[in-house]
Structure formats: C-alpha cells, structure tokens
Length: 248
Image (cartoon, rainbow, N blue to C red; front, side):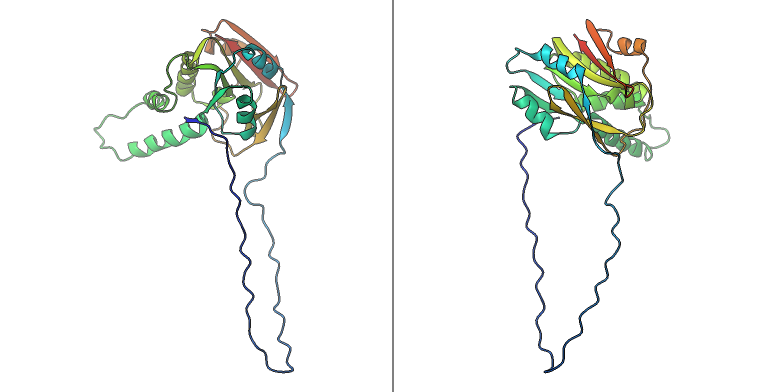
C-alpha cells in the first residue's frame, strides 16, 4: 500500500564516447574500420496495441462520487500517472495496491519456504496464506474508502483468495461507497491493465500475464460475491467485457 505523491521523472544524459587520437605515417591513409549492423531484436514480448474503451460505468461511478469534496479512493492496479492525476484533480486522496503482483510474489515466497520445512512440521493452507497477505497489504480500517477501482482482479484470483479479497474490499468501503469492477464474459486473449483517461474513457494496456485467467463469472455469481451491497448495475460491451458498479 502506498500513498502517492506526484510522480517525477528524471532525465539522463548520454555520454559521448571519446574519439581515439593517433598519428599515421605520412602519406598513408589509415584503413576505415568495417562496421557491421547487428540485427535488432525486440526488447521484451510483443503485445497487441493499446485500446481505448468507452466506459458507461466510469461515468456513473463519477456521478455517485460527485459532491463528496475530498473523497478517498483505492486503485487495485499498478500506479498510472493518468489515473492518479485524474482523481487528484478532483480532490481525492488516492491509494494504490497492485494486488495481483503482490499476491503472486507473496504466495510464491510461502511456497518456497514450505519446501524446506521438516516433514513433521505443519504446513499452512492456501487460505491461511491468503489471510496473511490481506492482513499485510489491505489492512486498512473498515470504511476507509469512498470508492475502489477493482478492475478485473477477481477474474484472476484462485478461489480461496477471491472470496477473501471480495469480503475484504466490502469491509473497506464505507456505507454509501462503491466498487467498480470488470468481468470477462469469455477468456481474454491478452492480459491487460486499466487506466483512466477522462470521464468516459478507459485505456486497456497489454501487459505480461501475472496469473492465468481463473474463471468466467455468471451473473448470479457476481451478485453473490458482492451480496452485502445494496445496489448493483452491469454494463455489457460488444467486446464481451462486463463492467459493474456495486453500491454499499
């Protein structure tokens, strides 16, 4: 968990390599070195281009938050300057927690530790690992946030973690607050991250896959996950992505 300040980018300077000096024999032109141009390989994996998605849920999300003044918001994806600036300009205090990346590292560390335990020593369950992760990374007081951007987090978590995470998010939202989520109606071809561009637009940024896609939620399952919320509304797009708002 980290409270964000305005991000600053440093500027580097490329050093110009020194040209070697030397004297050639009079009347002799030194041979010019042959320069071979190596083939250049792409740095990193090749991804699909970024896409911009019109978002009706974002419009309604902002409508629910209008008039709050200095509200509090939790973004459960990586830090994006555009998203942070968008909400800071509207008076919000913004916190971020990249839960998928954090959970992957945390659970892998525990799995590695289990390999070296004595045979007769008790192993903790996956559910217990999830509880410890949430206590360490989403341990805010109840009702800390007016709004949470959950994105498609629940689509990628295993069952033990998914249920616990949904319950924890419900506790973190104050009464009258809301959660914005994304659910895939079919298995996505590309793992993406989300960032807010303006009042009606979200950019989908292709990224290395953190976890494989875990499930396709049915409508009833979505309602069950957030059953303690009073109101819900879903928006199904042509790209088989469902956006949803849940008001507590």
